[in-house]
Image 1 (tube, rainbow, N blue to C red):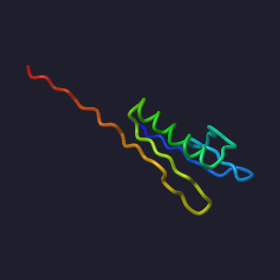
Image 2 (cartoon, rainbow, N blue to C red; image 1 turned 45 degrees about the horizontal axis):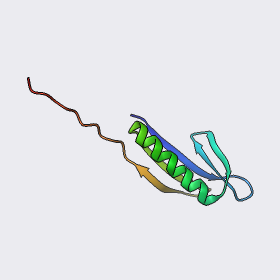
Image 3 (cartoon, rainbow, N blue to C red; image 1 turned 90 degrees about the vertical axis):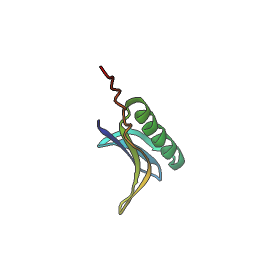
Length: 81
């Protein structure tokens, strides 16, 4: 399974954007809205695919992990013959 990483980065005029890799998913968001939306997107992706998903806030000198959903382990059912 793959892993999803969403990043929240400052854009212009004190607003924020949500990115997936180099793709900008949402732009010109207020800080709190960007965090809530990023967390919701990661949770939806994790719930629908079972893939690991995380959200990080990226600043010039550091990054802060905001949330991480671990990869869902799928149980293997075995039957005795």
